[in-house]
Image (cartoon, rainbow, N blue to C red):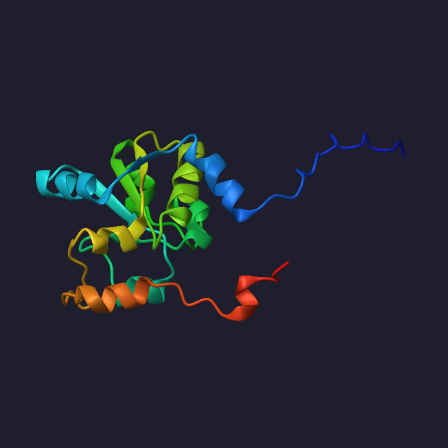
Length: 169
């Protein structure tokens, strides 16, 4: 039996950091500020606000009317034929989509991936929901109840443990 031709060699990219990956994504993703999103929501356009945080984060507080699709299942949620498929998201390829997260990092990565998947009008909320709250914009919990801005501030404030800070040189 003849040997199969070797698969085209795959070049593994060199190691990088999360911050560098985010900065690379920022080069190809439009970012808007909280006041821009607020204006667009007030205008009543056919805008989809996509929250890519984890379900527990979304349940605690989110922008009213936003759709929660965690970053970890985004690619499958954007396509038909998967357990994770979200039909509203699949049909949103021609809509204005603003992706949000806590700080604006996951959202810029998600927006970059969505562009690769054919979403032509996708942007990311610069500063994330933390900036949205700083701009005194409303957040609601999973039951639609308003979230106190001070409660949101505490929720969005990083609480890194010494182990998460890394080794100090």
